Length: 126
Image (cartoon, rainbow, N blue to C red; front, top):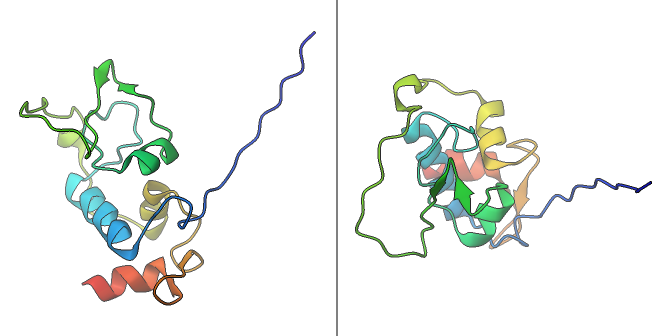
């Protein structure tokens, strides 16, 4: 017999090195992409830092293809994502939270430079 233990850990934005600008960038990429990079069929480049890439739970190979991280240099252009034709036009706050990996836009805060919620950061970004 073997004992198996399953556990989870929620990283704080500070542990992941997230800033207000990175939350805005991830949200804009999600809205412009029209679908979640968390979908198993998505082959888009997630445009995430290495820490955030791991936080999203991505393995180093995705959909039997290598994923290009922002820190890598490449001249090749990836093929179109199969989910591009299924892109949504409107998103709920819950869908944005699910993509960013946070519980709620109003209850997730960044401490630097001042304490602000992700909702306030996105609203003030335009």
